[in-house]
Length: 191
Image 1 (tube, one colour):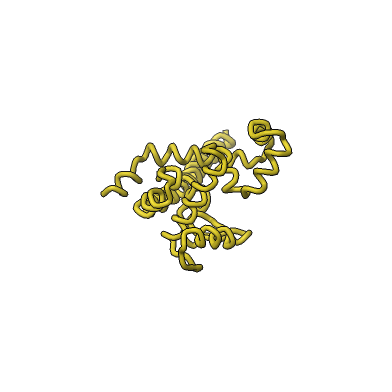
Image 2 (tube, helix red, strand yellow; image 1 turned 60 degrees about the horizontal axis):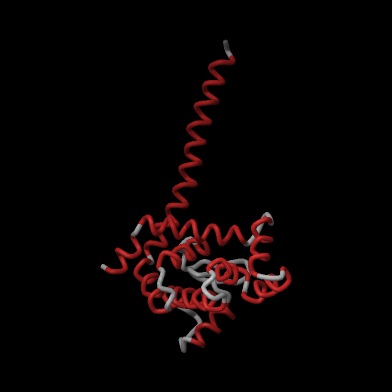
């Protein structure tokens, strides 16, 4: 009989602390969504200015890359909301005739949106390849496609590999749906 109260206490503690841990994880995720939505007007403007035209896609990219943190810095030196490497940011900025670095968060959004649109154009509108090129670099994608014997063959190889850059593409598209469902980007951007 002595064991039963301990089991109940253990179960109660597990439920309380397990629920708290789950709540903390949910809150962290939600905080990132709210941070991204805090940039909604700039995201809508960058989407329009760049010709990307899909603020939910750009918001999903920002969430995937930085969780909406303008001061984000990766281990490879990628910076800002869109996590652009300095050389990539400088190349895109030069094409846009933009001064910098340093770049403001709004400029980082425009640079990231423009770069993603360029990847979409490079891959004839294939969003899968564009997102993979954004993440891995266009040269790595070109080499992968060539080595596999074509786009579909390479994408199939990525789908089977674990871990895989394909998971990045899947996350971005899932977050895109989340932002579309929340519907706040368009509403805030047009207000």
